[in-house]
Length: 80
Image (cartoon, rainbow, N blue to C red; front, side):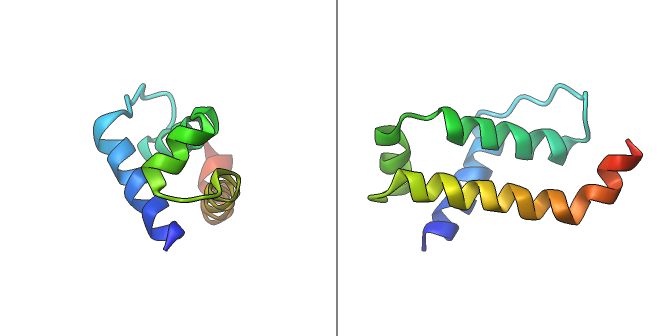
């Protein structure tokens, strides 16, 4: 359930807040910007956005998702 809410927040962030600077490929910048966004949100705001009781768990889950994405795309990132 929380994973689905984080996924929805990711795509809402992509649509409403993300500003692509064209330094890195689009999705690379998007993933890193979302990680920074989640880390910078106050606990109360993150809990409200995700309707969850444990914002620390949500942050860990988001960080794990970033790690998975990086692992899957490491070869591409190394070429850049």
